[in-house]
Image (tube, rainbow, N blue to C red; front, side, top):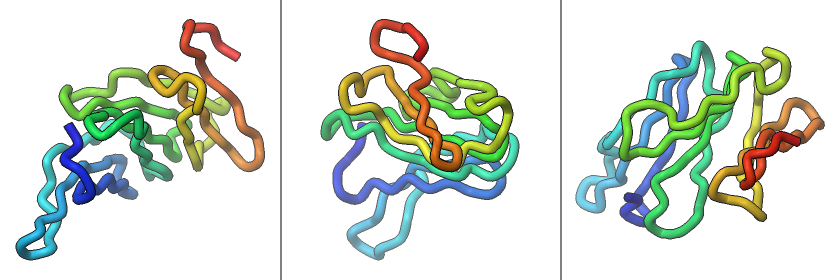
Length: 122
């Protein structure tokens, strides 16, 4: 899915994020998909980086949720509502041991794993 070094993932204060490709001809961004599912500012958007052809990224924001998207579909494939009791989520990071299904969210200095590869919560 990702075409390489030109892929750009951006987030906005309007509850959305976009996947774009940087044109090598005119250095402009061309949006390839938009995902507008957060209610408020998207604080962080991060590719999963499971390989060159990975299509998955995660987002988190002021609405207190973390979301997992696959650019091949139009809606989030996983939503973690109230990731911190409804407080804003400022940062997310993919877990190294289980990149396929694990997303960790951070609020302040607390890091909490929300799911594991076997589906258990911790």
